[in-house]
Length: 478
Ligand SMILES: Nc1ncnc2c1ncn2[C@@H]1O[C@H](COP(=O)(O)OP(=O)(O)OP(=O)(O)O)[C@@H](O)[C@H]1O
Ligand SMILES: [Mg+2]
Image (tube, rainbow, N blue to C red; front, side, top):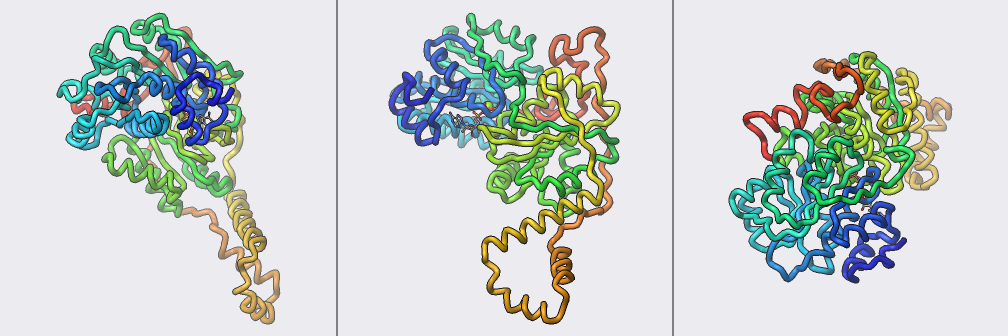
């Protein structure tokens, strides 16, 4: 079905057209008409299948730009996602003149207060900063019609649940509540239903939880072998744009520096960086100024960056759901992608938990040898050479080439040129601080009992949620 056939205002149809959308995705087709009737809704669909527009359209449709109160709120676990959602909602509200602003931690609060005085209809926020504004009375949610928890299962996780409850207490009883995520563990869904009114569940049924466009591989190796393996894979696969996930902030910092030391362009993102640094890193990555983004789970959910071709799980994610979201940064909106996960022998049981959740077996592959990595880089050089030949843009070099051919053997000449063009695998010694492997669960009985129970994780330094910096005494507002 096409957006043009949907019963929504013409302004929104025009907006979707301007965004380049013609056909609706399944979650949009099913969720938009239901949400429009005003009922509560839990929407689950695979990563990268357009959930933002699925809740964005009903929210814009319900908003009246003439009213001066805030009418809709979208809550997200990370600042970057709050910004991204605000952009998408702004695009959808473009012709209807429904204004959305982003409200998140790490940005000057006075500036946000000034923006709020200009009476936006919708705010896209992270929970901590939203609560800050509620307490300062710079935001009132008592007139909202709709609240969306994007990445709902994450928002209802231990790290955020208290904030969410507090936010909900500041909204009207008769508000419409929508939950969206690619994953929805049962215990969290049950928790959510307590503050929803007979929610409708819309689940886009697929054989697997992960998108079939993503090729999923794993490599079994020892902790000390990981870094060499990563750079060899990068040499062979030469991703157009890739995200490398590490478990902790320290790990991300070390990995980024180690990659740079070996001559790869890489930038890191995690919750201890200033917001301006986070913005800069993400901008550089989106604009293709760096090909490799090294990240904690702060980048695992919701981020929509086009042409991420590869996701590397340098460390295993904390839980199977995180795996689904991490690899979902590739293979979006119909594109293909590749995910590669490193697993140390003691972590092996986690692989099976992931496969049980995704219903998608992963394929084991071996870490490439130096020779294979070299061959990968040679192929890249040769491909570049062929591309140049086809482009025909080398004529200014012809007379120099003739001079060289008069003096040397042609095969020797090309071999020398290829050697110079090939980025030979770098073997600069690197030592990373050892990360403890993910603990194997020692719950008796069923594995995911209680969903994301505490004993399911081993996390000294979980980024942005459940970790020290979120729940700790110096809790960082998000
Ligand atoms: N109907 C459509 N036609 C074409 N492209 C679309 C359509 N709807 C959304 N998109 C594009 O698809 C991409 C993914 O959408 P979106 O970020 O909403 O996915 P998601 O389901 O929220 O994923 P995640 O679970 O990772 O948050 C975006 O670039 C978006 O612009
Ligand atoms: Mg999303």
